[in-house]
Length: 111
Length: 115
Image 1 (cartoon, chains in turn brown, green):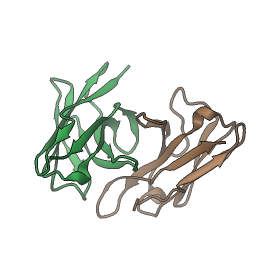
Image 2: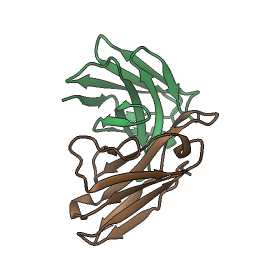
Image 3: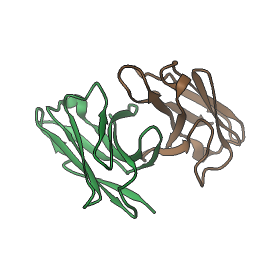
Image 4: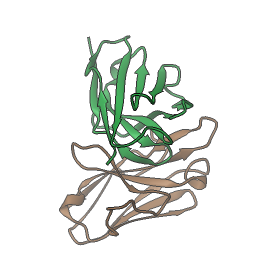
């Protein structure tokens, strides 16, 4: 059971837009930055979004992030077949047991 | 550019200690946080812990009693030790740069716990 809740899967057609949600609480998303990671099949995760909505160098602007209250959202526009991957949100949890927490991951299928 | 590479045994017996090393190349280990994260086959990511280059550490509470992370700045390496392993510790283990934001990941190494 992950501290952050993501939908197990989402799907959309090429060229369309999709959003992936990440729900937490005041001890994690509510008071800390959220990051998003993309894990292509058989590879290591890669940073996609940091500090809620910033993109590292080299990440196309088709990828966007936002946060509101205790939830965060990853948006992907102009879907490509190469976007098929698992997507994870992550943040810091500043409860009694301070630690990094991740969502359970969302499998994106581009139909 | 900076690259991370995990190394260590791919098979560990139950009750023994899992030991992995991460070598940082293309940049200095100084002035950054360094993490270990694992992913059981077919499952999600689990943060194990991090170390600052100066040596301060923080561990996942669920693993804290069995985990030790250390750093060797002279070799540009940091290491993970996980004691008393069971089959539940079978996973791909990633070393990474960062703490709240994991900026850079190693390719990962599969460690299987089995007799």
